[in-house]
Length: 276
Image (cartoon, rainbow, N blue to C red; front, side):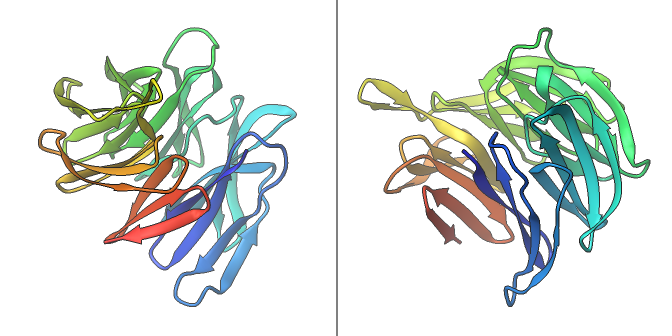
């Protein structure tokens, strides 16, 4: 099943779809003030992830018949350059400065130098080729990656800085702290410099004998971490100690969140809501 996700830019909104269904998806850029379509782009396969920047939009695409991810810089609907690696992308794209990162199959972290318009390095994060739950976030100095609960910090030159198990599935970056959540309801704060844990808090709830935890996306803004749960709640926790600040109940299904400007967006099933 494909999952739609929003990416925000200065004056437009881009739409992408995630999932493993076969087919081509068209990237569309829309003016946010009037809803007018500016351009569209057909990638060489299915668009799995996008990341905006001042240079354009980076699009990662795959085809079902080729073990390969093609990364393309798109500007005004035209491809400026493309590069590829022999792995399918398993995460979103994280793009900071001149480096873009994603995790591919076999738990390989890929670093793309967008100035050189080519793959700069790849590094294996875990031995073996078993499927893994992964996510990636980045700063100008390093990429931070989760692989089955282990958090890896990899410098922009591809060298490992540290690697610690924290039992989290997704990350958001504060000023000098990583915030992670798990499907068991845990929220943890980890020092970005050395990977030491600062605090943890449990927000899991019992639903018919099963623990409902957090979904695979979260966002942080100042003093608050926002994350959706698998039992249809939006939970806001304190960045100081993980205590709950407030929560909202939705009608059905899991909740996903994203921040853009001064607005918090939450999706649940067919519903999109915005909060301030």
